[in-house]
Image (cartoon, rainbow, N blue to C red):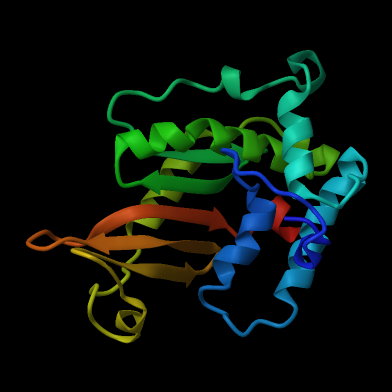
Length: 221
């Protein structure tokens, strides 16, 4: 994502990156607010936050910030993705906290998908971390019980029947596989993801992101 990309003057390449939640949240909320005003402008504003804390990139590019961040020596960055706990066998999700509060939960349909995205999840969260004010950075680690409570709150959400109600209008066919977006907001918690259905099988989640709207990162204007 960069502010000049729509003019077609910049080249792009595909790499395994994941946008930090600070930016992804605007894309996720577009599922429930497709007619939102100036969403693209808000995305650029969120990307510009990294210009403010890390120095401006040549094109106000999120990809450049991600590349620079992952290339920095560990001694300059402190905690890195290599320091994160290794996934355990069968693990499909993770709760990430910044400061003393949970920020997000990511769940995938399979352990293989989770492992494929785990490192990028950690790297993107570490980039988000740089946006937090010093007093939040110094507030200490997140208690484990808060992570468990956050995961339980996500698990308690109901998304309705796959083929029933308004969400059924979003069902897409991919041969035998069908999919639809799912979203839910309740109090401080918001989630967005994809549910899939195969013949003769119960619908299930392929991917779900849940985030804490009351986290200090979400409150930064």
